[in-house]
Length: 154
Length: 154
Length: 96
Length: 96
Image 1 (cartoon, each protein chain N blue to C red):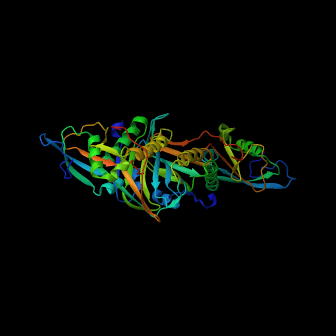
Image 2: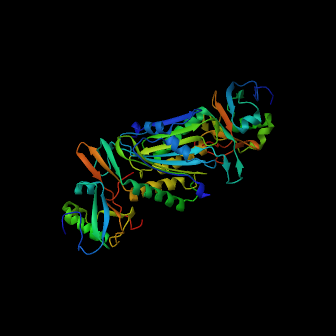
């Protein structure tokens, strides 16, 4: 069954189309979908409050695509009822208010793990997918650095 | 602050536009969004397995809009960090694969309750918003009946 | 109880004209979407429900199961219907 | 250690040509996106990291903090670099 479930892994510098992504991940047995999207924040209050003009995303593309695929596989192992999985990461310059990433999971029912799977997906993407962002704001340019150190083979 | 947060309550017989809804609920301080959508299932395995050709949704429109607004208010009480809330319910004939409902919540960060709020929103919509669906399939037409009995004033 | 839309118990009281709506299976059971009824003052929601089940026996199966809203709020059986109330009866909701 | 791209310890062994990639802050520190290096057989990832820090002192601040992938998999410091490996160094990721 899971062999026929669609997986879409996209690293792109083009805009997102949530309705199209949802349609692509919808099977005849699909009754529920959860979509997480990250958005470029212009004003941040948590931590060191600051303003952002735009973000510049950079990826180690071939590895990023492999790791996005791995995140999808990890979701399938943990939530076998999840049907379609789309993971999208935008790269390049992204202005305030722009969606940057999408984790989309479909299933027959809303209690089939779609919420948990989408949450897991974005958490893992931020741990192991080699993508970095530089914030450009009134104080100049600052690379954002993560904190997670993947284990060998992870 | 919460007074300036956008709320969109839509009962419609027209198609959904997730990208537009997301843009409408995105503030300069928004960094994350969770979107739940229900989808018309053509093939159901849980319970009594059956096939569906399409669904026909009916609403008690003015009360449905009031109750959708109430669901949004309940979300705001429980997750004060949630920023934009859009609740959309489609009515009329909806074919297999079509999104039927949307609960969209935005916040500054993904750990601000957006996942929990969207889940709560769809659960509550299915409890208190006066909308009913009739399944049309090979066995004819069947009204789907819910199970929840709201308390007076709920 | 007569079979017209004037469901008064007595002719001496001032009447309350209420609008009654039916949805989903209850609309199918009743065969129409809405009724205008003249009810005695101080009629309760439970009394209206009894009147309707008497008039539309197919509603009997939903006794105690149907939901009711008075002026678009879920209401208790002992609620007295306010003047010109909009009263809706329907099965447990199944949207989403 | 010489300053050319031939970082061999000895001239007698067969060499392993590896491609080294830098991303984000590490690319800024090194000043270029990629290098081609001839390394002795059986060079480990940790040895390559030491070589690079020696050659690009600005990398020193990231010693023990930078992540490394060998052929697009996160790798342990004692991993021996396979022939024609693609080795990438970068800070902890910050996508999403």
